[in-house]
Length: 295
Image (spheres, rainbow, N blue to C red):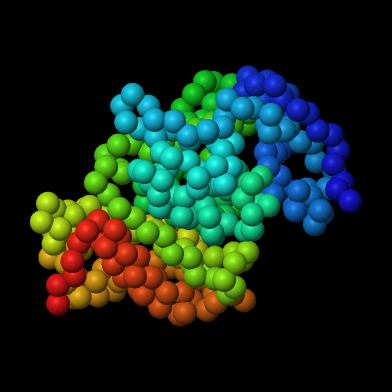
């Protein structure tokens, strides 16, 4: 049974904001794959809910005039994986969300909900970090757009203020054009499991396909929130693609993260994963870009 105090079905974004302001304790529910579990476990017993599931204006993937890719916060994981724009330009995001749960969860779970629960293991989060995603948020004081790196304020916490709602996610053209990417999820089971570590890499090569022009590296579960590794990125920019380059990349990434020990894995094991998965994800990204690894 679900102990729900009351639920209101919002009709539009303005309606959502008004109800959240009127009832500051109310919680937004979309697909419900996270919220309903918390209610069933008694963590949100008796709560008030504002359902945004009927707001089709927050669904879909669109190409903006400036080349930015706009993703509605209510877009399901299944939609993202199958979307033609995603497949053509940022297939790494479709790859990442396809690692979430099983088919039923991917049909109801939303990308906005996945990042708004604030957990470091969210499969879409590290990839959105690697893509330098920007988030459009609306509240009683109007709209604001922030980088995803500013959205996470601590474990399980995001920077939504009273009355605010996440509306859209943007990936600008400069962060996907000529980039190829790869996401690797390491978990205790092959399917339907939370990530022990998630690693996303996107890279851009020179015209000869033998030098790293740019690279983005992001992790989930390598710290209290999803994170980028700027030192590792800078350490190989402009370098020839060699085995030594991969070692520099992995070693530098390992020095930047601070994973914790848990029942899923020790800190030392996660550090080993950081080193190894960063190299594997980069190699696959280079392969997708048509690059060749020199000895």
